[in-house]
Image (tube, rainbow, N blue to C red):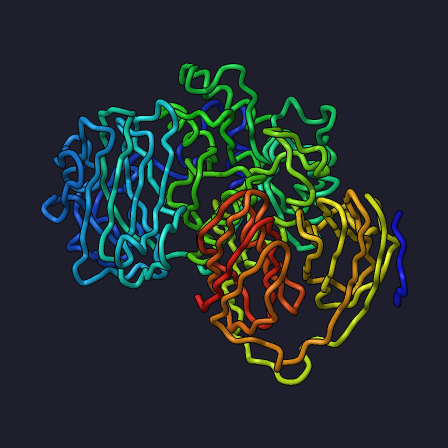
Length: 630
């Protein structure tokens, strides 16, 4: 039972159409040729960083744009970290030779040092690689030491041993914040099979100018009904477009969009992309059969009116060998492969663009998005069928509506641009590079006092609806049971719930969250009697605490209000066994999930703050926070 007390309530399309029924598609359609024109690479008069540019043929995956960091014409500037370093003239992509690093052990690595420091702010780095015996390729940037390094990690598809270009989008930032204006070294490492051997060929290491803003591609795999009925409407509210990789012969199947829905999305600017159906993985098929599979799916989508989207391939089953790669470059203008990591905007390698699992919101996706925001990179996310939270099973191909809403909120809060594969290929990126202004510390009243409500009950149930004003709401919860979870929902919304407080083993707890001027309802899950007091207190400028701030506590609590100029760094620890959550809320209604883990925790997180903010903590043990300027 729940009651309330004292309530106060273009042209690429034409090329593709011309190719239908004509057999194999030319490399002109694919957007790249096997051999680029002879001559001086960097012919647009960009200058070399490490010396004169090599002359002679430039073979893919060497490129001509940007500035060379190393052309590998001399290996004296490189040092073998593990294994041996040698030259291979027969494999040259640029100039007269490529470099080979190899070892009888499981790892082979090479290093390049910049004694005076190299400025990589505003630059992306890429390199031509051939993993003859490597499961992973790691490129590390020491900025300026190993403690302040950024790492790019690319998982090599099983059986892949050909050349490709690796865009070194950052994936890990294991230590302190790096300073990319002072990079003192680059390490290139091949992780081979366990016990070895390991071998990697490398050529044409260069930097190209980075984009003006980070970006995201949302790929709604399979074209499920929920992608149209729920996701499309949520994206339309933000004026965002996306990609829908579909299997042509599954269009209109039970639980999937039909042609009418897909055409509606296409008319809005979405890409309807190719996701071929295969009973046998592509690498296990001969080249001519692979070509037939890709062309058949592409042509079927184009015939249905999806010419733009049909140019883009999402590789089925995450399997690709060098034959698949070559065929995909012939048939498609971009290729997306399940992997990990961020990449450039747009990528220099258009046929091995990594995408990651969207539902992993709290175990990697937020980190990738934050890195994309910080370093103006691209993250591609695979979004499966959307369902209510209680319908998401372990290891199921589903994403909860709550997490999807959090994902969109996080993308919006981080200021990332949502783009389509066609934007990447056609150069129609319209990136918002406006940095938020440095805040001016307010004076006087920050937030006026708002509504207050009190609810009481026993066990689980829902509260009556109630009104709140723009700003924040503070919840004080007491209960005499073992555990209580309180969620907040807007009855008129799509059914998304936001957790207000969860506490176990503590008789009381406090929580804060940002809210809109709207109607709400509480959903309570408890095993005893409880009461919940909600208040919207007035906040004055004199209440704002300056950074740095250290705080500690046990169970559910919040820290703030704090004054932040812009981005901050939060160092958090937790010694409990259960869920540990740290959310940042702004007086402007913004929210960012900083930590969402289970068990002990000790790490730092970036927070795109700015202005008056609060940090809300959910924990089942002791915790500490250290909040400092980033």
